[in-house]
View (tube, one colour):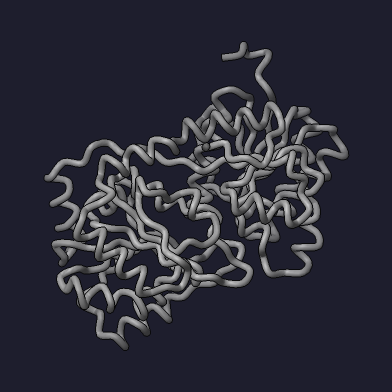
Length: 386
């Protein structure tokens, strides 16, 4: 640990922090905590984030709305840079690209940005012309998967500036049988065995297509299985492509009311128990223009709870799933997806120990060590997790 007078001064600007919810928000929170261990960290984040971050972080807040956050976070960053003189300024997504370029030009600070995939493919001409183009001048670029790396290169970001740094996960504390039973009682889980779907109910997550095309095929062969859904419609993402109405339509049309249970948002510990109790997590991604699954954190989180994931191989999900924690299926092949779920239900492979061994490669400690190396020196387009 460096002495206090040698600690770097770092400014992190990100809209993706609690109290906003989602995988990006979890990752940026863990990143901020990791940065604060070896630097004097200032964070500019959404209103309410001060209450969630540790006391050793200086926090400035801005309105969480997209446009207001851009304006007010840039204004606050200019003031903070004049006062403190940061060594490095980090953007938590491509949305911060123009701000980083302004700060670099005015204060000659090093700039770093973390890209998630969606922030490269947003279907908006103004965004692509201004925000995506600004990323070409950032000193070091971290991306969450090999697929996002390819997207970045295709949009003109120099390969030698890019490093793939996969997101991480916590390894949950052991879950005893009493906790499992209490969870089932609290949420009135009616199924002895169930599949689980976790995440925002966006179009790209593919839940409506799963209910329409895949779940009936599974039920034909495993009639006692149910589906538990944890998550809500998106409210704070770059594009709000929710599909709650379509999901409800499919459940009604196919008479699946007794086969699907919605839990909505649940506390972290309850989510861990839900994942641990599930037989299989389903991740039926679908291709949506202007949207993309950058990595697939839910697959790593399920593996940490001992549960395998079956997914369509789209976006960056292949970085998150291997034979150790599940199976990838050709996109759109409903029969193959259903067959793989049934096979996994019957064989129990990969099992809990295999899944946990896979998850250990993706802890937040590993993530933060690799991000620190990138901040200290530029990376290249080869996965930092391999």
